[in-house]
Length: 481
Figure 1 (cartoon, helix red, strand yellow):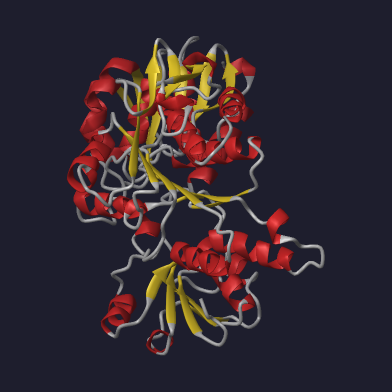
Figure 2 (cartoon, one colour):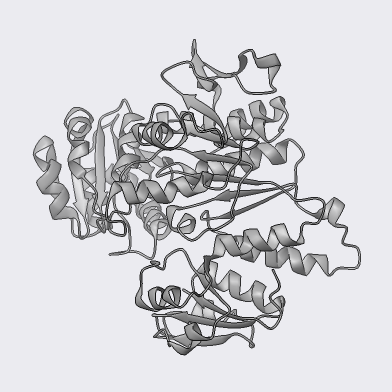
């Protein structure tokens, strides 16, 4: 991309917007950032921008859209807001931060383009992405881990650009071997040429329906991950998930230009990754002469839970297809500890386990989390509703949840949907929820924070919610157990 002297307007000043602004400024672009939030609300982010970046905060001035050579949209900004709709009618080039980073990488890669490995899905993205990265690094690869996982890809490229100015920099030695990227539906809405050589869709369950008008629209966004893939690329799909199966049947099956399809499954033997006799098996192109290869006993995988077994199989398929040594994959499955806020054991007190699953921000995630426990559960749920169908939890709640403790804006909606299935308590805040849960818990029970909602009604984000939960639980005194 030729960006020197180009007028670039960046819409949305969160991590992605700030990363794009810093990278583009260093590449010589005339950068303007705009956000509906005020200077005060964005002081922490705006303060790290180079002085050359012009800031338009609190509104979206039409002038910086009208004269822009390129408009870059952060993932949190809907593409149908009025300034973008008007700019699109005028033929302006509008792309997302992910697409910007991809075009910059491909344009500067020369003869050694590092492949992109991309993971999307409603649930499990961060764990799977991090595990793929762990496997590749274990196998001796130099990787860049970025995307929706928290580190904007443009920010990682900016760091690489700074490193490349060192006198001892040798791209053939110090440059990455692969980009391992977690991609959200929001990011995939604004791609044009983004083409991962290995991609995965872990599952498609209702999520973000406060932004999308239908499940079909949400599925369409997820399908963007393979939109530009070719037959020489690979796409990994969950054979057990109705959403990914429907996508395969309607968009991919029998299509000559589709990527190579690889499945993973807990329930059936497939061309890909599957369980057999309690062992994880791999049947992949170019591996073991096409015969199934036993990797590990499922019980030896360090991260626990049925959803993490699926994540482990998906990550193994991706890493192996990307050329990772088999032993590095096996070792990683046995040692990878998992991520914070994903079925994270905080402590055991008085025989009661307290589990932080704050990343369970939709109904599908909570279903998988509940399935992972044999113990009686006290479930803390609630927050900001994302138009989730909480009635899907009825059966599991009636069978496995001893008590339901509800917080946040969606507490009433959840109570009306599933409150009759078990003892249900309304709590005023998270601390009250923990206290009430402790009062109902007996030795052998599990207190599980898995909200099925976004966090923004009471917390900065799901990480803030999870850390506050952990602090509250850590502060519980033994005498109250």
